[in-house]
Image (cartoon, rainbow, N blue to C red):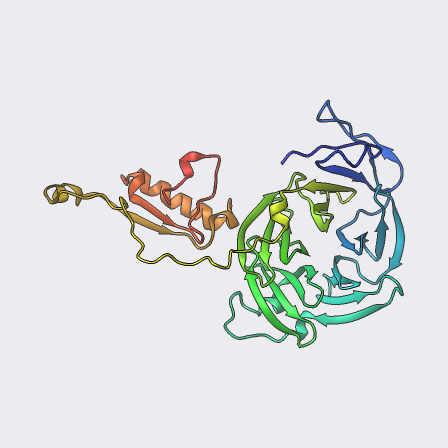
Length: 352
């Protein structure tokens, strides 16, 4: 999706993406597109590392401080807090703060400026033999927090075992859990009954259901290395890789809205599959038997670990089979969702 960088004084009615500047003093970066100009007000102090929207107001986090941001990118000191690395999210009428260093969650009343403990990951009750394993809440890092207003979501970093958990803060029990699909579920936002998870490393946004069921919805972000995630007025607000600029990206409205199945949807009776298996003359079976066939099974969805060991190892084995006389049409690859990774290198594409 293309992104236009517009001067802050331009009308908001120009639909696309807007780059909002933060802080004081202007710098003039190199203009990559001659048809557009970028004037970014850069923050002379510490960059922001988290972003969220609460009741129409935009908040950012920097070590030891929560800041209030305006629509023009200006910021003001809002409150001092005793956390060096935070993840922010709305929690009803309050802010939810995830203290990454101490793996603890707090609520913050933006009116009274009162901070209150909500829970620590060590307090969460663990279920035996859960998938993903609840023990990750003890062993992994707290990367992000989110909320639907009643329950909280936490993104746990644990390499290829990174996962997302939905937790009831009252009973401190895990309600649902799911693999994150990346090694850094860095930011979480909740909107329209869906959970959105941003991964800065791959610059992609994934959508999960409220109960953390996986969907096929995935979007690549225009700003590489973007982090911090707020959903406001149907658009995505993120911090660029430096944490000094807020980037707004409009996305397909279908991605940020609920899709309901028709109530009369059902399974057709007496299904017939035609022309799926060609008829083979018995006289040529002996000719076909000497052919080689192979089945490769990938450890997960290909797109989840594109460029990593799951997909790389499967691709390597596929190439070795080709080098040893197997024909492409006789190699079958099983992925978690039945889809290969859309690599630009077509030689590495398998027959799924």
